[in-house]
Amino acid sequence: MYLINLVDYTIDSPERDRCLNKLNFGLSQGDAFAIIADSPDRAHIFLKALAMLVKPVSGEFYFKDKKVDFSDYRNLLPCKKKIGYIASDAAMISNITVMENLLYMRCYFENSLSLSLDEKADNLCKIFSIHDKLNVRPGKLRSVDLRIAIAIREFSKSPDLLLLERPEDFIGHTNFDLFTEVLRDMVLTKLPVVFISYDKDFIEEFSNKKIFLKDGTWAVG
Amino acid sequence: MDYIAGYIGKRATSTANHILNLFAFTHRIFVLLFQRHREGGALVRRVTLEQVYFTCVQALPIIIPISLLFGSMLIIQFAKVSGQYDLGKTMVMLIVRELGPVVTALLVILRSATAVAIEISYMNVFHEIDALEMAGIDPMRIVCLPRLIGITSAILCLFIVFDLVSIIGGYLIVWSFTDIPMGDFMVQIGKAITGTDIAVGIIKAIFFGIAIAATCLKHGFSVKRLITDIPVSTSKAAAECFFYCLVINVFISILFYM
Image (cartoon, rainbow over all chains, first blue to last red):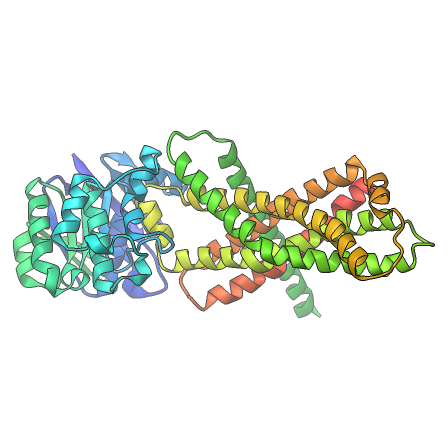
């Protein structure tokens, strides 16, 4: 069973670097794909496509063997919820505190405002030493702390798939070792991962497959 | 000539399209209002209360002095010609029926509607709406619905405050600081005001609230990528809101008083 299966998936854009042409891609439990692309934009758009953040012009997108209907954004929400997205355009809600951001999803789905961080999120906050920064708004954080908070939010939602864009730049060198340690534990549980990275060691350690994107076409290696 | 006709046709089509989109957008929020969801109710209530606080409670220090000034100014002007007109009736016609809802709407547009349009545009440009969706949360439910309810309730409350303060406060100011004869002003007001006046004021406030909230949210969501589109979209939203309020005001007045 594929977790994600793209069939003849096509994204059109006036910018050539942001097109994907009749892409076929299958992602199963335990897969760890490194994206190797001829342009960073194309790699990014592929990651966004997997996160269902762009709408294809043609082709089919299957999530857990169910065809995803892109005609209404509400159909995508239950699938998006299961995807951890740590990329350059991942954001936090700016008019609430970091703590509220970390709890937002649970507050919504558990329909309660009096929640505290669960064990996993609490541990991650301790590991990355951002406990003392939880009660400020994201705008007041240093960008490196903000990105760590985003990573914690995505890790702690227990995703079925993790999408990463240049984690070495996103997390920053100081915390990169901690990040890889946490990621290593998650990958050991056979969590599928798709990532873009320019760090050869990272690609070597975390990928067991590669997808090559060139001029909008693809090849899996 | 063809060029002008083409231009007019294109503008007319795009305006009609925009208005229909606005109606469709409002309809989608209204559908959410009547749907019962197990999730998110607590968050929706909190965001709604925050919106009422920002739009209504925080606006009180501005709307109270403005309504006092309006009330006393009108009483002074019309008290001079009170031989020709019934002062109470004139005040009810001007303040309760027309000026109250319009001035309240204008203040809400200036203070809150522009803020909402900017906030939503900002959330769109900086991918905060995407972040909500990636958490499986429907932005229409958590962003739009509370703002629609909050702004509409706030306008209703502010309209009541405006009417009361401008009539009672205006009267007290004129009575305290001038020698202008006003007769039994409060009795005249009591006789002049009817149930229809109060109902029309409430109806206007509700429609203004819906029009303002939906227009600002729609313009906020129309900004996709460029931060430079935010001021353009905000000014369009503010001008459009005021125009829609005036149209609704005239329409409701014609419906009830003609």
